[in-house]
Image (cartoon, each protein chain N blue to C red):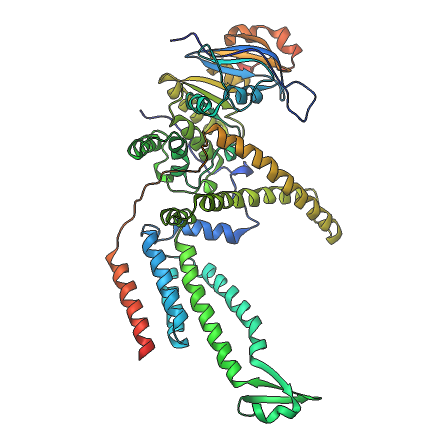
Length: 248
Length: 285
């Protein structure tokens, strides 16, 4: 197994409508097999990074590479990449595209052009895994937010990605739903998927992650194990990120 | 492998979990189409049944049409367990629209010199200046025919939209070879209607909580903002949605897989066939 799955090398990216660089010479490597957390203030470039990692945006300068190979931005390659790199958006509404849960889960598989028998088998497996069987034929706009999150993760996991990117998965969830989400992510991790979660919940990062990236204004400021990162109090204080409550 | 999951608890503190309240009708119809008692029956059967009764009622006389309304109402309210209140509300729409157009058919007017020619047709009339305005005999029969006809066709169509989920109708359209472009557009419209409604609802709630509709004048301004914002946010959502599609590997056409788990109930099949035959027979009786 490779040591690093996805690598960013001096990547620059800016949105058309703003003068500021969203990513400013970002260099970052996602270690394989780890539970990574990505922290930083709002607007520091976390979401941009995830969108670039999924090949949805192309860097202005610099290289993003998957398993040591730079990404090529053509349809075929990106199709294959997006199967290996799953992205769960912060807002499930953005991700749920089909009308019912079952159809929505099958959507990614149909895009891969798999045979119907395999699609059926994989959809059914995932429905059971994520305890969505009862909701299979429910229209997606009848679901609660917690249910939508669950479906949006199932959507991506049905493709069996090697790397799962999650953009603030715990936003808007209450404590109980957050706990269930984490349990679900841990099981996914145990089955060999590398995880990257962008989040503001430092307590969660401290308890859950094995590797932490700290970003500020489009740059990687610090990385390491949670103990190491949260030991750097002065730097975190400067970045106005605070510390986890349970750290002390 | 058995994974953990996000359990759903009714969450009163989180307003995001609440369904839209301001636009109940379309939501209600949509929900009912997924939860009614006839959901398990094949959409093909229901669709064929609805179209057959529709065809019969269009070709029949008022007596049969009234029977059709009663029979379809039994299917909708008793068999499919659609709340009578919702169903009556829908029928009322039709009745009100029908009644609004009736005066034009029933009341006729002619010049006072032609009064002889309409004498047989007139039930009751008054002279207004040079005009003779009267209630027409033929017009009344025509109006009655139109009313029963529109009611009976409406009851067939309501049966269809209340018992067949839109996604299954789409499935049928795809099967029938309707161009993908059209079915995809219909699907996206269907998805977006609810996103748009909930966005409008959120904006409206936010405005109301800040006193946006306290007086009619302020309300008009707020409404203007709401409509403008709705457009802007729809565009934003469109952008996000296309990113979402791309991230999930969209390739030129929208394809999904669905499982068919329909049951066949002989009782309903027999009743629908016998009923249709009886309705047709009554026309010749």
